[in-house]
Image (cartoon, rainbow, N blue to C red):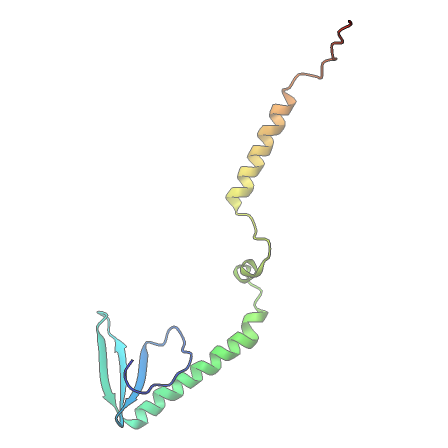
Length: 119
């Protein structure tokens, strides 16, 4: 990265980087074709983009500290679970295997008396 830029965590949807180099202010981002574009911008515009990043940082901190911990969604619960839930396929497969086992056990002949050999 060129120049001096704020070292802060950014939202993953933030497509640009701002930086200062030799008293000039720049913004860089990748365009729709994936080509890196760099433009010199005014100090006022730099400060505006800087404030956007700070607002994003405040939101990310609130999300981390308050909202994320109170979410009770199936996906977040599964991530936090100590014992992972079985998939539907695994449950069905296990049930089919158990049914097969019980059917095989039921087809076994009754217990036969032990033959005692006399000597």
